[in-house]
Length: 132
Length: 432
Image 1 (spheres, rainbow over the protein chains, first blue to last red):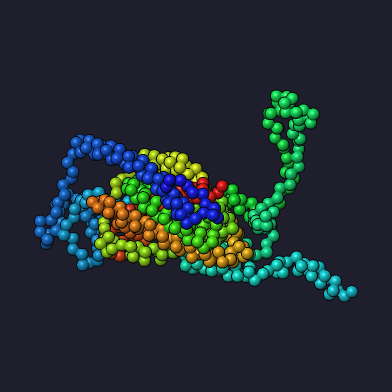
Image 2: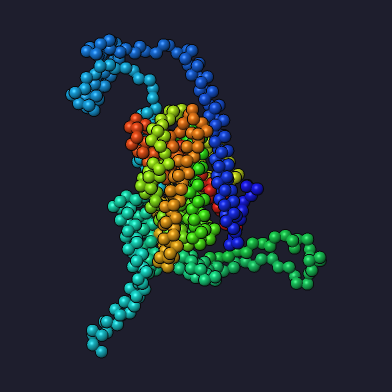
């Protein structure tokens, strides 16, 4: 009964009206619910595929490069051959530019991959388009 | 007769051909309203891409032009604009059945279709916008703009967190609540649906629906929709703060997984098939939206994507905006119902925002181990990407390290689909 679509006219009552609104909301939820079901199934399938690929990669890949942290606060920098010197120079310059001469570099680590920069890129793309 | 009198006569006749005598005070009021819209668009930056053409079209509509738009009165007394006349001459007569033959005696081929009548077009008369406005009347412009919207939209955040789609669905609450409000204010069901769609914050859908159900109100509805889209950063935050606690606003959500190209392609096809099967009246909008998105995500049609994102959408925006503005004649716009539309438009946005936020809270109640920040619920109002940015800004007020933008894009783009489905529902139930 709830799914019966009420066609409105001048003689429609408040109950007809409320049933009509409810029907409309149910139709919207039904459509998007079906889309959700498809996406959830798809997502589960692709997550399994990706996990299987990651396991295969982990099994065949060499150990990751060493990550070194300074032993004492005063000395601060890692072994020279862990991170190339031009990378260290670039990081130092960037920190100086952002923070100023008060910055003291105490450690440099290879951070795990993160989607933050790609998210920032997408944010800037969206910001550049005034669509509507 | 003196030389002065002789030369004054053609000048006098010329002045009689000018349009000064056709000016009315209502036109002057509409000039002021157009000026306000232009000020909002240019100085305040309120959706200038649409409001500038709309305001310009409104100014044109209220000038006594010739060769721009034709106004006629139909048999039922209804004013019509943007009609053009075609003068035809039949070229060849069709086949005739002899009067003496009865249907029982008629030869077998009498039931065959009468050959089509051919006409020659002698003359087509109409103004510039009589033809351009057919893009709206014939439901061409809004779906083609959706082609560009689809090409610009990344559904990745939604695919990565599919349950966000329910926030986009819940944000359509404003449409249906506003329908009720419009009904009680005396609007017909068709007008009420056209006003309610403002809550979807989707300009092309609002124009598409109102053109079919309430073309007289299209101008006011479009102005309200685009104006309120710009006011989303003002309308939404108070409602978001009212409906959420401090603890809820600080919820940090799990980071999203990467979405593959195949998923995005399958998503576009699935959405199109499901929505068209459920609401065939929204086929044009949904099909073009997903076509644009499919072109974008397949990554082998870059030229088509570039055209959709730039040339197509830009050209159509100019024509759509001005054609909508052309409908804003003084006699239809300067009416009490315009004020009702403006007030109801705010209500539509407010209820849509509330619907999304409350849906997020319900999701947290049902699934406390994987909470959703309710602030992203308001992004179900499909003002892309403005509403998502509002969620981001609000979230950062309470936690500087909380980045909600990409999470909010999920319900934001889901709202586009939800509004199109809602429009399809209204069309299928009210356009008959």
